[in-house]
Image (cartoon, rainbow, N blue to C red; front, side, top):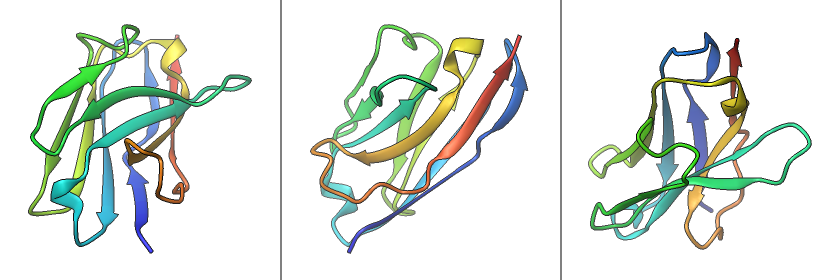
Amino acid sequence: QVQLVESGGGLVQAGGSLRLSCAVRSSVFRAIGMGWYRRAPGKERELVARITSGGSTNYADSVKGRFTISRDNAKNTVYLQMSSLKPEDTAVYYCNNLGLTYSWGQGTQVTVRS
């Protein structure tokens, strides 16, 4: 069973930065498209960034220009570099494959203080 372990969240001031990591225990990681998702209080979980197995990326309009998704296939890890953070970015952040076929990890809390 594939295991997802997110880390790197925390409390930051508006305008600050954080780098999230997601370690993926999978023998086929390099062949899988991955995404970062977030669930804000009272809202549905949403996809904020995605990266294909070939490295192509896409972003939600709300984070475009501020967030960067990347992957290191040698480390089975996907990253989310977040800059110019806003209070509305406050959420629990999760990673998963683009088909959402892995069991969700525990997520990592990001809180942005105004």
